[in-house]
Image (cartoon, rainbow, N blue to C red; front, top):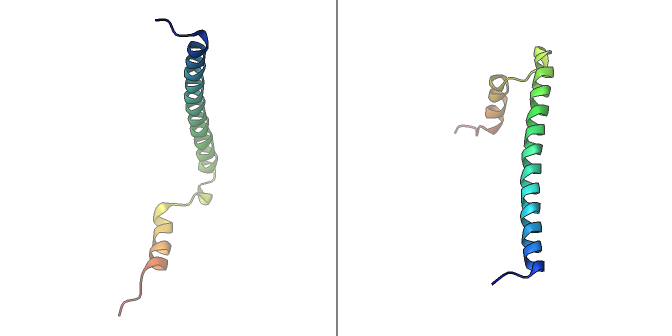
Length: 69
């Protein structure tokens, strides 16, 4: 038995909305990655401003360390 026109139209609309949402999420992810790459390239132009993980790690570990007894 054939579905009524409204139900088919609603299902098609819902599917298209889901596809559009997935496309937009994918596009946002690509844009975020491009922005991050551009920012990293700009930071790379000024290596003295770059924060190295190994430079920051001792300060945080000292702050979180509990005094020995």
